[in-house]
Amino acid sequence: MILARVTGTLVATQKNRKLEGAKLLIVQPLTLEDTPRGPELLAVDGVGAGVHEKVLIVLEGRAASDAIGKKAAPVDAAIVGIVDTVDLP
Amino acid sequence: MQLGRVVGNVVLTMKNDTLDGVKLLLVQPMSSAREPFGRVIVAADSVGAGIGEDVFFVRGKEASFPFYPTEVPADAGIVGIVDSWHIG
Image: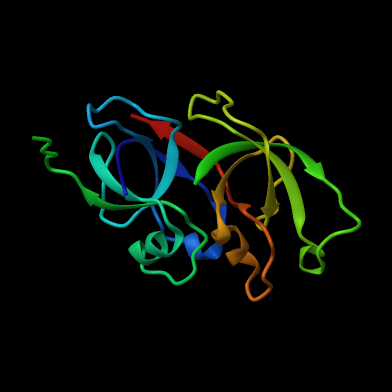
């Protein structure tokens, strides 16, 4: 799993039927110092996250599919948590 | 998933039988600022996308899920056509 920040929302009418009802968010992966790392991703939202929030993303198909309560949905990234704090002693 | 733009298509005569009827498109991954990044990839299309359209695609074995029960040997697949997005 990775940490990322939600930067935007996306609208797509024509999509795979397993994605109907799923919220698609644009997220920017972060380093532990909260700086952007690598390209943006699109993730389905399983927890009701919003723009600007720091989130936990799972990058695996089955887990991502489970996160939106679907079986075998064609997704590879899902938001599975909203991060309160990250402690790095 | 990632944002991308369809920039072309690929035609194959000799191919794996399970790829029969599957449209293969060239997709340039891009950022939300429409800046291209990385290499153009070949993706299996299951939503009827066309050249010039903004799409989002999935990587990995999930790319074959839209074709279930046919097990299409694809590692990238277009799963949606983007209407719009909003940053911030």
